[in-house]
Length: 472
Image (tube, one colour):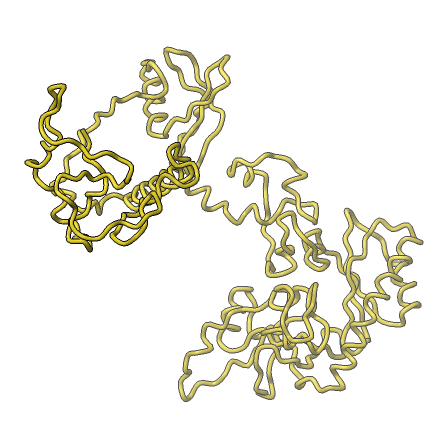
């Protein structure tokens, strides 16, 4: 059953449904049962089970007989026979063979189901049912004022009107027995209906009223939980929770139902935890138990006058416990074992291209960045010989026909024999022959190999590199 049935009237709890049919919470599907037989094909001669399950406001469910064999589906509104006369309207919650299983589960015999289904609810029935539900809020507040005027120690929590407005059921909570005979007389005179008083527990009250739990979600009892099991403090003790009633209690004032959700898992894990281990005796002293980590299978101990705790595995705890029974005291809680480190094996392949290095690209980028930084640093460094220009700029070569450093054009044709390489016209020619001081011959470089063979020829027929005089 979806929220579509809730759009026809009340019955949703507690946030209700949106106009588009989507539910804000799971309140509409609280009492739904998954029909796992719906996709199965029944035999040809199969006769549908005549008893159906119908749910009403709150957690109330009852069984009715479909005497006219009306085709019903989950979520349909039907008009049924009331217990004290008149009629009521409810939703179909379960049909088919699952109803037979629910009867066995609740220990109800088929012969004991006597109430009948009259018909499907008509629009007139639905309108009257809505009007009855709209009267519940005002009726409950009026009844509370009457109870306060009579000084009754009771709390009215909810009111449930019958669909034909002939009866109203008041649900209340009280610590002890309450004499409400005078209250019933006054309520019957005020509301002009039949009154039924029904006492419920704290958990049922929280289920009807709803609320938000400490987990930030809507209460389980008001969304999906229908049967309430007893919760004891031993459930919190097994889960190593602090026995603080303020933290363990729910909106109803009782222990939270969620304490039972993981209790079976903790009980299975506690089977491996040794019992009666309050302290362990060692040569260092008596170590007392401070904490037990159930799922990690560790127990924490501490020595007297020491603040640090030592985590001991369960196997070691059982071993020390058995040693203490035999009268043997171990040196310490833990056994320190030297771990032999194996030598690193050399790779049986040669890394040629560096593919096994994850940082090879980072190193390459780092080298490129360093080169760029050095280049920019040299580019910005001034040249002392050339203050007007950059030292790293290439020097233009003197080509024949173009002006040299003195501003005059270079003469065309072959260079005269015995001339020097100095392009300055004011320079004196270098004398031939041996130097008077006994030095070496300046023409000694003629026998050296020419390193400028690979350079392109000059336009005047000479090879490059002859613009500067030979260095001594």
